[in-house]
Length: 232
Image (cartoon, rainbow, N blue to C red; front, side):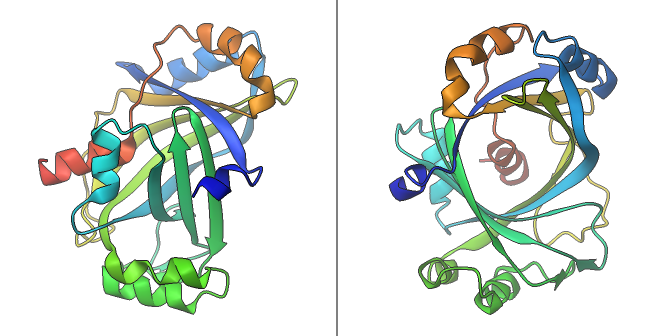
């Protein structure tokens, strides 16, 4: 995992949680920033199926305050889930403090009703992109939670900084069908704002983030979902 941080695929992420606010108001806060953020892509749904060990090792590393690398392994795709999920990717994300890195591997399409650990492990074995060493890990993992949320994307006028706004965050256990109505895990009036940028612009990031007027947060959708769904 340390090699991934040395691969050049590294960025900084500053996260802020905003309570009791709607998406339109959060959008206005971003656009009023002196970095002049403008929407870069159309808003879309982000969907993820998370994996962890039977002992919840990835979760425990996050909540126990370890100073080492925190790992998330998930299958991700975009848009509203239909019967067949198109263009999914396996995503491995590592984070240490506010520094993160991720790699993605293309996966075959799969049926939205087949998200058991066994079915998805078989799917991963079919991928030509996923490295053999990573494939060997999945028989020892299980699916833990499915998370989806709406996201807006922004870019600063100098193209040095990206902002994402996430809202309508939903989570369910993998055995619950996709089209079952579920509650928002942190309420409807809840937005997660992330400022993302390369290491070379870290000295300028404080000026940009201070204009948002919120306190830096360690909030994790995965941790919040696990604690609410499994009462841990």
